[in-house]
Image (cartoon, rainbow, N blue to C red; front, side, top):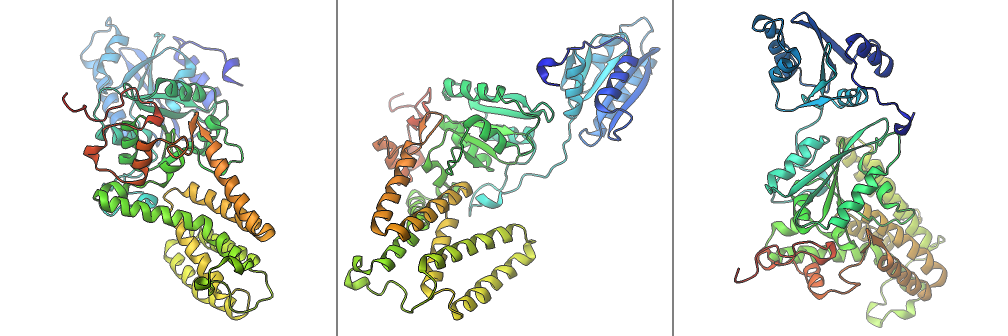
Amino acid sequence: MTKENEQIWPIPESLQEIEHYMKQRVGLGVSFDFGVRKLKILKREVHFYWVTGLCDTGFITDIVEELVDINDHEKLSADLVKIVENRIVNQSVSPIKTLEEMVTQVLSGLIVIVVEGADTAYAVDVRNYPGRTPQEPDTEKVVRGSRDGFVENIAMNTALTRRRIRDEKLRFEIVKVGERSKTDVAIGYILDIADPDLVNIIRKELNAIKIDGIPMADKTIEEFILKQGYNPYPLVRYTERPDVAAAHLLEGHVIIYVDTSPSVIITPTTYFHHVQHAEEFREAPVMGTFVRWSRFLGILTSIFLLPLWLLFVLEPSLLPDRLSFIGPNEQTNIPIVVQILLADFGLEFLKIAAIHTPTPLSTAMGLIAAVLIGQIAIEVGLFVHEVILYVAISGIGTFTTPSYELSVANKIGRITLLILVSLFHTPGFVIGGTLLFIHLVTTRTFNTPYFWPFLPFEPKGFLQIIFRRAIPGSILRPSIVHPRNRYRQPPAGE
């Protein structure tokens, strides 16, 4: 039954009706983790509903003790509903008027208190979701910097962000997505910086999602709000670092937090957002620029090194005399392009295997693959030495890409270029590189040019991409996010 077809049932005054509804709707008495506690206070029934494992039992015990104490200090003629509301020892108490909302709150981890004869129930936030403590993300490690990271609890994730931005204009709007999962999704932005049109678009897209549940969390949200199709390049940036999320909020980006996910979605983003890393901003500007250029070189190597080497192998006349040594010196019965693809996919197999292999064994597996398989493959004539060398260099360039999604997209682009070069030689390399460039230039995310500030060209933004500028010199926010307040720092003289 969809939400549009559900009938809205007000809270009945009879607790037996509520209990019957809970048995029929959520399996009270069948599901072992759905509980009810019945009390007798001033000769009237008071019921507690909760889900075991999502609540802090210490808080529930304190509330029960406080309410039971009413029998010893209040008269029978007292207004029990008002007394219960005032005696609930918790900072977050919300009135509830419908049974549907009551079920949603209980399944979200709150406890709901209902009083006999009252048409209002009270939801008390005593949530204590199972989870882990904040720790540094494995994919975004830094040499020097904070060691905390987002976790699977949306409340803790927003708290980690507020710890870094104590601004009264910081907003977290929360909605529930999924007819069955009812997953909490929050939109984070700074009111007087973020583009209100962007906030409205994201809010509208989230409210328009119609699905039973989003167990894959933020990735499902991305697919709904962007409709990426078969474009391999990531249109949003993921991060598990609160400092990175806070930095983007201050630039004017909008962040999407999804409960049960340790990563958040940064919107809008360009290609160059995916090649930035927190390490660049934890070093001196010169060192940060050096690290950034090294990363750019690694990314270019991961895309173009293998196709370019294959082109020189197929057309040695393109090489100057000083570089005539490039290319395999020994003959082989297997075409070079087949060797490259086999080695490249073999590297991908190793990466997938490492993900599914326990950590103590993954290192040993890598050594076996690199030493035994690689060496034996060369000795039996399956590969030539140069193929292993250039595939390994290209693979290292892939691992220098901070964004995992971008590294996979670049690998798809590299394989496409390899096939085109093997078929058409020089025209294949030129046409393939041109088509890849056109694809990146014409891609847009939330109406944002994907290749900004290169195209459309903006000198100031381009210089900020090429050079890691000192923070005191970064006065303006990036224009690509259309910030309402462009100045990070007051202009001179103010």
